[in-house]
Image (tube, rainbow, N blue to C red):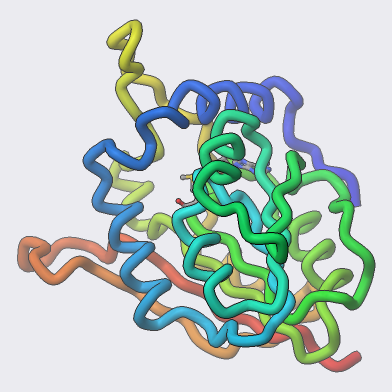
Length: 223
Ligand SMILES: C[S@@+](CC[C@H](N)C(=O)[O-])C[C@H]1O[C@@H](n2cnc3c(N)ncnc32)[C@H](O)[C@@H]1O
């Protein structure tokens, strides 16, 4: 299924993350840190699995996957982010590929046990090509685990952004709003069933704060 996302927003995302890559890991970023914590403590079971990671970035979650997975293929659109990830993880069962996930993936059909995507889909306008590719590459019964900035946070004005260390500019990475029902209903229409939803907040959040992260755990239907 072709993506309708304008090519210029895709190239803006790519170049923004290329600029961010050298300090993505060291910037203050509560969303990144909470995602890592949830993934470590409540993420999907990965031991012995063939895993495909979408938007691996600098490899913060790839490192965790690599420790127990049988093999990991990690896709990202940003050469800058991938360069850091490749330095961080050199294990031979981990393969990094520069790839726009809104275009068809260079992954054979029905070969993957688990697809994971953390903090990526806010940059993808149309979820349908991503779910369609996930359904294609997963074996029957395979899982899809998504972790995203919670849509309620987006509606309050939060989006991926950073201060460029050279120019001092605040760079807002192009982002698109997807509601919880869109994440779920598009998945159901693409051949998945819902296993679990999660809404997460850091332990020291101010009382009444909206959830920071949404997780969606899906299973590829048998037919
Ligand atoms: C906020 S970072 C998250 C990185 C990593 N998953 C993590 O949790 O730290 C978003 C990543 O998604 C990648 N990305 C955004 N749009 C993409 C697309 N269309 N195709 C592939 N990667 C994309 C960016 O290059 C960036 O590395």
